[in-house]
Image 1 (tube, rainbow, N blue to C red):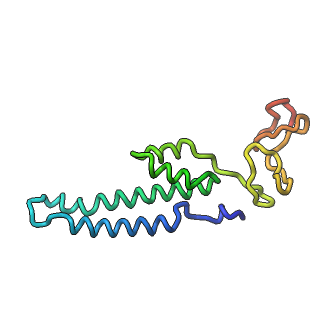
Image 2: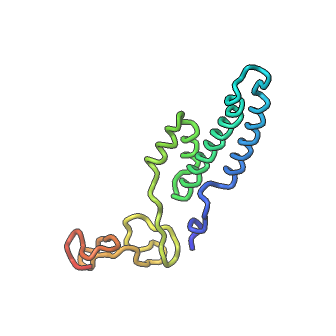
Image 3: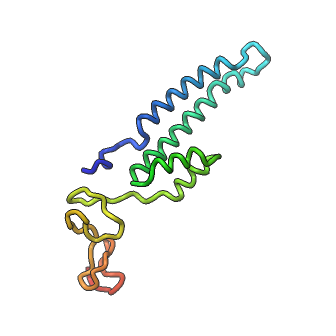
Length: 153
């Protein structure tokens, strides 16, 4: 079992704790800052202390997801998190979801990370993809014939 497959949570615990602290502190701050004795409608008095803290806590969790998911995929997770933070209007997060790498695969024998398109594991030599007996090119799981030379796999 690889270290990445044991992880059940994508968002790190630190992001959850930070989000909770932001939620509670912003709620208390907004609750005390809203003028209760002025002519503010009841709905505004209820929504002002609730919506901004939940929005900021949710944004913190989105950034935590970008961090955890990029780390899980073997990408530059600090760079992607900083891009998601500093590119405004959520465009950094959208760019992350468009440009992120696919999930890596792992060797079933030794658990090392397998590069995409390699037929054999670089560490233990286990067969990762079916290789054509004639042209030695890597096929895909489930192929019955080689796509390059037509030989039976």
